[in-house]
Length: 266
Image (tube, rainbow, N blue to C red; front, side, top):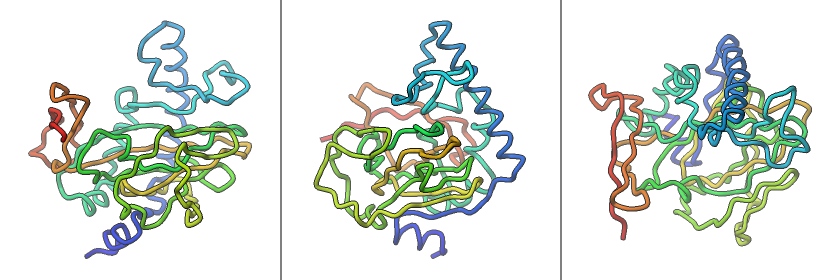
């Protein structure tokens, strides 16, 4: 067993150090600025796609320098070739394949943009508790596009918590200076900060309990999030009539996408 897989299976996460170059990081920052402008245009035009561009909920103003103050951008692959290419990065995908196998599909592509001084906290939870995918065996990849520190709200994880099985978490609470969940019986004393240098990534099991603190620094914290899964994971959806198309990242006979119909659940 490789060291990557051993660490991941034992602790529930693995850190890929500084795999992005300065040029790649600069291109991502330029693209984030462009996406802010796209979000502003969608909002002005009353375009439904503006829903993918979520405002920071606890800021005193919804704008900064004439652009929306964003907390999150969903479905980044639909709006950006830069972040589409990042999901297939030649130094990242082989590591994900070590964990999940040769055939990979993409469940999620998101940007988290904790604004300076008031980027909100995110309560502890498991990704798979909210995702319609079973079994809950996905890999989430959190790529630091800027340095991620305790001060600016880096991810916190509870090591080995992927062994707890899937839990019920209720509503994920978000606030400016604390991270709470509607669930009160979880001991988070074993949680550890996972600071990352820009260009590094945290890969973690979708059952790992994790959260993040507020951004108390004078600079934003930018993170690209992706979630990958193998064909053995099924889409359960809301009903058996549901179906969803997922991008293929690796293998699967070179197909571009795969459409999965929802599996019935007991």
